[in-house]
Length: 221
Image 1 (cartoon, rainbow, N blue to C red):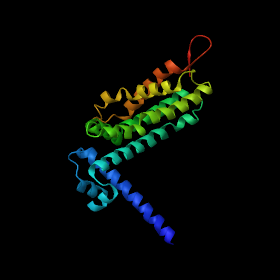
Image 2: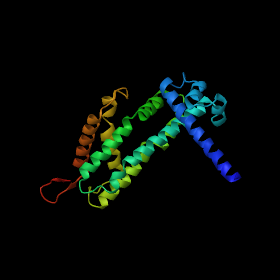
Image 3: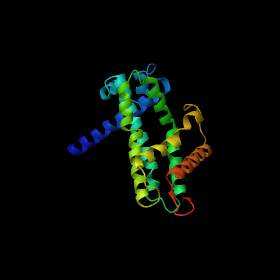
Image 4: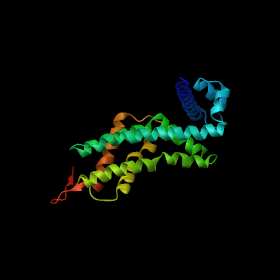
């Protein structure tokens, strides 16, 4: 019974910490770092102000940990978006368009837009946060995507090339247009537009990396 109570207490502490980090990110995204206050974070989390300090010692620490937690969640969602590439089926173009659309939805969701805005706004105050976000950021996604593309290349679905470069360029084709289209994350981009961007990105990607037939110079799929 003592062990069970200890595990329950530990689980409760972890859950409470996650709630505080989620609330902190929400408040920082809404108010900005300077205007955010710990009492508001406590209210958002539904806990007492001393409880916030028990878990995270000061506002700067809250900001760092909240940014890292948000970046980790964003990465997890992006990695999940790559799953269709494990078994792409016969229509690689359609699978890549599906993956591209999923990645764009992740890129344009409220959390990701807020994460980028906060990073840009506070980078001079918290230069170390860039390293925290990078730990869960683009290079981790590119590594996972490169692994999927390397497997597709070995299976004969893509031309032999540097998979890391191919992954980087695929992501760039997807996300490159979005800052302008979303007006720096202030405009909601509808799903039809996201799908159109994904189709265009995949078309260009396959022009560069798609398998060419032996005769006629046509590209597949």
